[in-house]
Length: 145
Image (cartoon, rainbow, N blue to C red; front, side, top):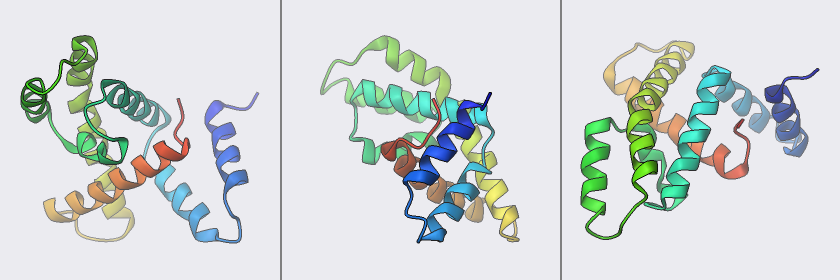
């Protein structure tokens, strides 16, 4: 029986414009940065951000890169504007450091695969590109659940 991830990859590739082979290659390179479980955690995290409603999903990439303290401070500031579901905030607060660590590992992997020197600057730049790609794939429905 085919795994769920393989089905998702087939679905995405079937829906891609195969005349633009660059899209297929970029998606494959993106998937190689993560383990299946990591992608599932990222998807869950993004669904929680969506359910929380604190930002537009196009702006949600910043949450993939922030730590727990920054998130807690951000939510404290936002709580003056609106009441948010505390259960979702608590769940996000528990996940956020793990998500950031996943993004750091993916950034390092991307820098190494491109043959560049691993420095804070190159990893941060890679992480930003990965976060942007993650949001695009989330919005298109290409991330595994």
